Length: 357
Ligand SMILES: *Cc1c(COP(=O)(O)O)cnc(C)c1O
Image (cartoon, rainbow, N blue to C red; front, side):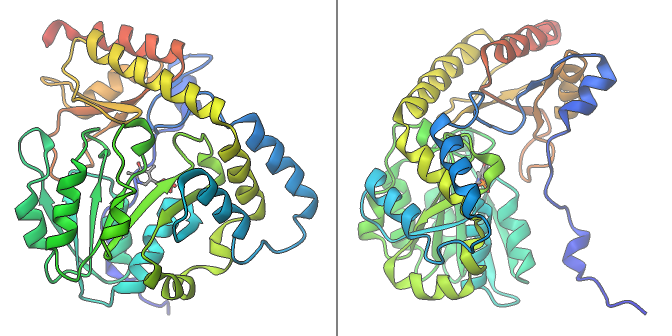
């Protein structure tokens, strides 16, 4: 006899990028352009590596339970706020859902977007309702806010993954103000690559959580560190719902503190991303959506998403098929801004298939 596994696990799970070693071996490349996961092509900052290395000697001790050093470093860099940190922003999303959702509660997601919101919400037994974006993937403010009323939590990603498009700060404010007692989780994983500043909304919106991550701009995806601005009233419940020690290792927390000190590395990354994102949009023979992130969504019609991804893999380029994103037509791929050689290989590979476009 075995216990029954919960039926929600029969649904679609998280989709990972294909492993580069597999593509390299299958098509005979020494190195593959890794443009599927929006990582920082320059790697972690040397300051982050140094700080993580120094922390190893104390790794027999449990971490600081309040993560006070990391939270103080966030305040020093981004201003005094009630910060929480977690095991990636993914860990924070999960904790927020644990604070609010009972089985059967409603969670609203603006789509097409990052899949983990829905997966994590179903993990709490919540019912997920998607609200598709309108033309050019703009969020339809009234429709979204209306759907949020009566829901426990709503997810809005800006700049949005996978479209790269952003929602105006005033539109986010309008949603937060008109969605009743629903908590609005604003996913700002890519905000570092945009000129928009959503952080100031926290002062006036009492139902807003703004999630951010060290995985993209800071190049610490493997360390799994996320952070978020939460309203002060949420802190005690959040702390009780979270995994002990915020689910973060002391080594990861040290790396994040080190990374926050190195403005040279982040400035260089941002300049590189902005320059290449413009160049790819200009030189790619397939249409690219306007992006405020470190990736672009490319319309590969008449190819399907999977056909385009398979064709690029044969040229040693790993990009993300957008087939699995709900409420998105099946002819898009998402390509990260990578190192110079990776972006050049992508442009050459995609443009060699533009005869049909
Ligand atoms: C990458 C990503 C995250 C999660 O990042 P973590 O690595 O878990 O910190 C969250 N939201 C979006 C939209 C992302 O693309």
